[in-house]
Image (tube, rainbow, N blue to C red):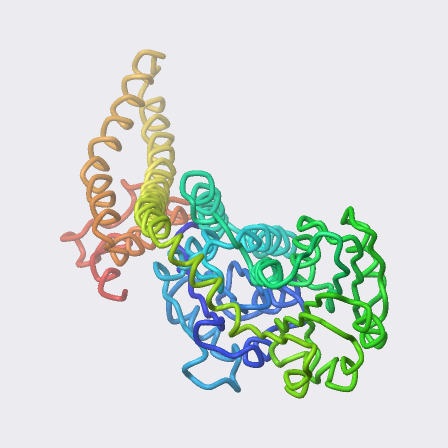
Length: 443
């Protein structure tokens, strides 16, 4: 079935704090998808979780069913932090996310990989079907087009790289020692950016040392990994450090950096990794996310024209996707209608030919004539409703589409029904044929 309706809910950085996003995040995307699939009326499900957003989508038979399935998403959050999306809004939002228009840093590249990974996770969990598959595939296509056909990702492409850009404006990075605290997404980007900037030594501190070690192996610089509780010691030898952990408490304070000498500290975490007391130290220059606004604003201004081009691209691609869904939904109803008619035709042909054979020999030519007549009748009778269904889809008349799917249920023509010659006709005994007009009034 391709007649399902998408319903989405997002908690993202535009409306929510980091803590609110975290509270809306489940253990992992696969768990979220499997949970959604257990809910009444849900046929498909998708979840996307990053440091800046927690989003879920379901496909159900109706908007009401989808809304009910998502009623308890982030129930403890204030209303302003949660944004609900209907079918078309969800489709557009997914394209905007893939293109980087919904990112904290406009046009950043990491989100398209995260979306693709979440797509495969949902597919593996059984959440992707005939509605979400083309929807997310189209979003990924838009994301790729945006980056190859416009300059949406020119310059700084993430907070992690923005931090290193700020550091490069304040310090000479070539030959310097850099410390990255946190081996998550932003820490990984910062480490790679430091590597590209030519630091000679890179230390990565993380709660899970194996993850820090894996990141250290990815860069060309002389890199090593230390546990998170060794951050203070590592900071004493660092020229520049970037922090990006999910720790609820600061991992560095004034005492930790009091004897570190001239040090540049950039804190990307929310809540902060670096205690405010660090700002009072004479030899330490401390910056936080707000300090990156100048750099991200420059990037946003540079990309404003590209963003407008991407918006036009999304408008065009959304129209194509919606038209595709309409054609599929009309074709499904038409296919159901023809399938039902074929079943009835075959049954009535068997009855008619059987009766003719009882009256005498039926030649092959006569048999073909009867069969051609039956085919012609089906084609001519269904030509008008076929056009009506395609017009209904073009006009978003989903009531007509659904009514057709109900009226032309293939079971209508199953062998349990008696042949037409043996069935009562309307006007003869007051009964009406199956699926008469009053069925429409039930919708």
